[in-house]
Length: 255
Ligand SMILES: Nc1ncnc2c1ncn2[C@@H]1O[C@H](COP(=O)(O)OP(=O)(O)OP(=O)(O)O)[C@@H](O)[C@H]1O
Ligand SMILES: [Mg+2]
Image (cartoon, rainbow, N blue to C red; front, side, top):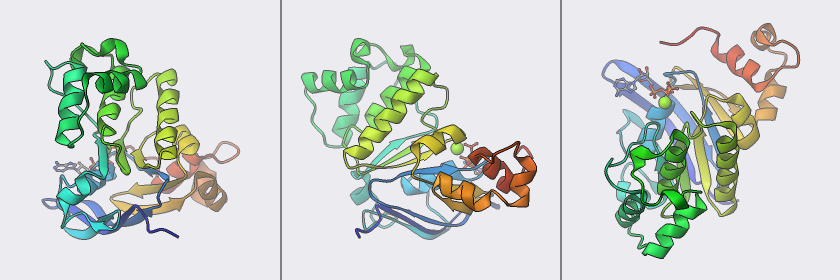
């Protein structure tokens, strides 16, 4: 067996006196699509920002492809592709210019033809000379994903990649995520869509109040918790992943 692409161990993150992530541990195998699920404020984005090297944890470690990510941020940067929850790009630049810029930041040289090809790959061939802000929401999502994978990363982190997409674009994005995996990538994504988690993720972690409360394949979690009284109480028939999620995390809306 090969070593995991990502190991998060004992991660704790505080914002002042507020503990956002509390002793969280999980690991991701190579070629895996892994979903990080949890109610608003559960600590998903915070966890991703530590893996991305944007934030220092209070305690804990992150290993990416065998490398200590906190000690060697530059060494792991090239292995990582990142799409943030709210991405914005320099407003006035065109997609071709932006893609060239970001490729350059990763040390990838793309000539005009290659830029065109990449944009066409993402269904954005006709928008090459448009500014980012003139794209529709779904096109913006696709473009930010094309930037995240411009250097063909080993590990791709996606924070709510399908939020705001229509069903067609969502399906298309799922297909692309599958294809990235087929090309040897591993993916961590967050989502509030249980349908999405169930159809694209090999395994999911449910987190709440910064801590891990369940981990496994979607079907495995349903099987494991179907008779849990908290899940039975909220299910309206055959328990679904959403019933498990709500049963385990409670029905209250988070602030
Ligand atoms: N920059 C920050 N400063 C202070 N507190 C923060 C900051 N960012 C997040 N938090 C707090 O940390 C907790 C975790 O937030 P985080 O953004 O990681 O949640 P999330 O799981 O991504 O939620 P969502 O589903 O709403 O995106 C929340 O209580 C949030 O209010
Ligand atoms: Mg978030």
